[in-house]
Image 1 (tube, one colour):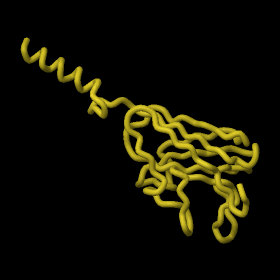
Image 2 (cartoon, helix red, strand yellow; image 1 turned 180 degrees about the horizontal axis):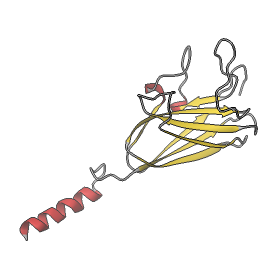
Image 3 (cartoon, helix red, strand yellow; image 1 turned 135 degrees about the horizontal axis):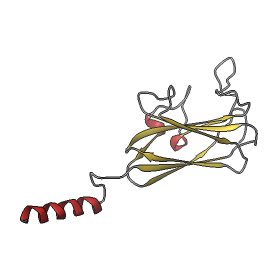
Image 4 (cartoon, helix red, strand yellow; image 1 turned 120 degrees about the horizontal axis):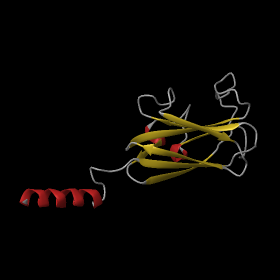
Length: 147
């Protein structure tokens, strides 16, 4: 009986202790602003380090609106994810670029990261998701535009 009581107290403490080992799945809310038009879709992808910009761990697509969009990724396992956003204005399912590889459509990355000669790294655009809800507010960027 003594061990049962001590075990129950231990489980009770673990359940309510911040950052406990029994942490529940988390959510990530991503809000994208500065969308230049209502054309097309906004594609938001979450990536692991191994699949960064190759294969999204999870992705969502919503109709573009100038007012901005918000998506919520629910039931995420605790971990580190990078965020990539594309404004797919012509709805062809890819990021359109010019002959030099410069994007013709809007884009954003986690932490509003920018790369120097290409996209930012995983580490620059990562967000740690661990227990509860995490929020990221990102501003869409367009090449050759003040927006």
